[in-house]
Length: 410
Image (cartoon, rainbow, N blue to C red; front, side, top):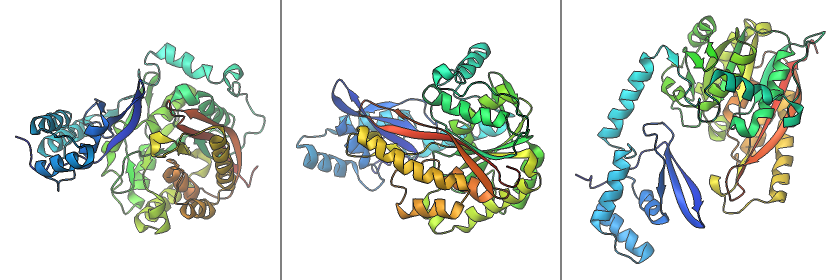
């Protein structure tokens, strides 16, 4: 029976797409309760905007008539609602049971599985090794293969993209070349961008991460110390790690290049509003991380897995980007990256708060966390900057890699 006040779930993403010139909307589940992407007509998407738990079936039919001038038969509306329900996209007991089941299954798993293997990178170990190494080739825009340095610099932090490897592979390679040529580390604290909201802003996991190349161990000693210092339960939202790619992509490179390095997987998800309000919960966790890193600054590297600007119709803009748009945002990124390379967390936050993060820099939470947790002053170096088009409407994403070295020994 159809609920008389149907409500759509949160954590769904609607992306405009074009099929032979006809605009449609792709609806996908960010939490992964459903693996299906639904393609909706503009009319169906309009109905979705009314599924807020306050509009009855009759209300929706009336609104549809006012908007399109056509009758919306109850059978058609119920058919759409059944499709949404079948895919766990309605906020009801059925979707809540599905989420609880997936959470319980994830908790019982001893390791975190490589969710995106075979999707955005090769699942076969030999093919994956070839894929990753090819990104280092100068012919592909890569930096060349790492060379032993006579005087290895202490690397405090690294910035790498989390864009699809097929679009940003060389940018990843520039970051990892710098890591291999720096002073050896034992622990890499991976600050991943949480693409779904986290009630507690951070999500820590103590699971080892599996990859097609083998397992990467979590640093249990660091995790114990960090979680002990934090007044916040860092594991409350651990389920967010199940399908989030921003840490997984970094782990694949680490397993290939530094298989003995241990990781601390930490997802970060908050906005400029929380930074501007100086949310105590965020500051307490960042301070706990800074204190834990300070116990072994020489052996620990912070790694922010981030992308920068997201521009175009796919991300809500009502214009089609062109070459001038890209150039403008490159200049904006350059200014922000210059601040990042100084390690100035306050100025970094001020710039983004001032413009309300209007360019949708999804790496804001990890970058802010990285800058606040840095042990000492740094000298930064931009390693690579690029962008990639993501749809037929010229929507694009910018990204970069950078290395922040200890200023005292540079």
